[in-house]
Amino acid sequence: MLRKGKIFLWNSEKAYGFIEPIKGGKVIFAHVTSFGQRHPAPKVGEHVKYKLGKDPKGRPRALDIQYIDRKPKKSSSPASPKRWFGGLLVLPIYLSWILINHQSKTGLLLLIGWQLLLSLVTHSAYQKDKVAAQSNDWRVSENTLHFLSLIGGWPGAIIAQQSLRHKTKKLSFRITFWITVLLSLSCAVFINSNLTFDELPSLLNLGGVRSDIQWSDPQ
Image (cartoon, rainbow, N blue to C red; front, side, top):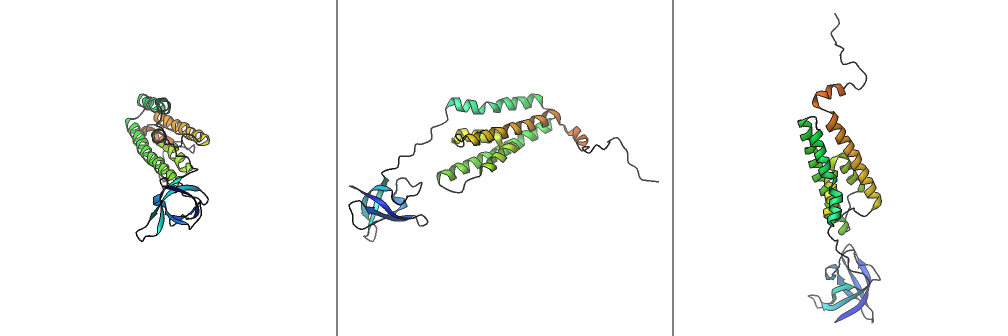
């Protein structure tokens, strides 16, 4: 038989508290493991239903505790094919472009290797932030996620957003994210199209010093 009560006291650090029966009487001990829904933590004043049981020492305690006012959290639905297609369409277009227009095979391999590595790191950062969000733990800052995208990890960010269903609703984040993608793409396209290793010496001539001057020791 389920009884009704409300959270009378709760210690978040020790993960236990007490329930005050609606019909009156002594408060009942309640541990977080007896809750069907553990996150977020119980709050004082919340109404619950519970079964009255006993601990190993014979003392009364609440079991199978359920929230009355809270609605069950809906599970995230998988990304629709349309969302996947829209978000990932940029990846094959970008890859095809750099494969066709690359100026240096070595530079191409370095660029792909760099972005692959950063994509793995970025995907891991999104996954860590997703888990932290679900468990009320320390989050990965949005600035960190944007920085990883900016320096080349945006392919991993796109895959993580769609596969994990994370960071897809906050408009300000989405706008900033796509700005970092455009900036990263611009840099990658410029480097891939214009820079070869033979051009590196000329790039060092940034101060306007003539590269054709030959220096010699004074006589």
